[in-house]
Length: 322
Image (cartoon, rainbow, N blue to C red; front, side, top):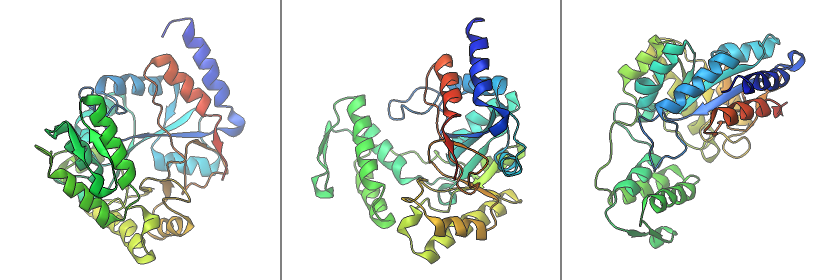
């Protein structure tokens, strides 16, 4: 950033961080990639993630999520407070993101769905990797209530995967897995190393990263009965605590849209399971009155330094007050 632009961004960030109502920005990431991937265009590379983290370190106060949530409740947040989070438990969180975070001295929280550790693969990744590798230039999915999908080039393969994922997201868990398994028959190869191993999970904890709960199998909680959702929430927590030999205090609702993917019953179950804070995917930043068991989050998608910083400044005015 130029010497002329930098003071303008500092002024914008200071305004957005007015001490009378200091908000908390919680950022969502999923993966950090070694190189650009046409099937995952929204995921940052290590180079992009590094400059984003450098900006956060320079212009913001980056806090561990649990500490930040407590400070929000107490009214003791520092100006320009930010927490960094990752969802699902991808191996690159440990192999690629962690070295950058450690080099810069930044804390983060990784929310882990325990069913997919040690060689498992999430259903959406099965779909993505199928469309990456399928040999045909089209795939007829009319039997699944979907159209014939053209797979002529990288862009069409990416669009096809996005379409099928949107279609499958709100199917029942068994039906969603059946669809992913059916599609996988068309794949030439499927990876078994996308998610973390138990050893990588422990390396995060040793490296100063908070490990958070994300259920066991990442279901849409609103699609489960009461006993099943409680078991997913508490069971995932218990498994993680046994793996890292310590408490797990933060939780992320799968998919995370309040009123659609989870409701007040699930918030109560998260509290009852012993978590101290939880995050949603409602877009915005947390204010003093925000429920710290439904903290909003967002992803700054911008690809340049000026736009990234401007987005961070402007988002801090989008307060969620309940």
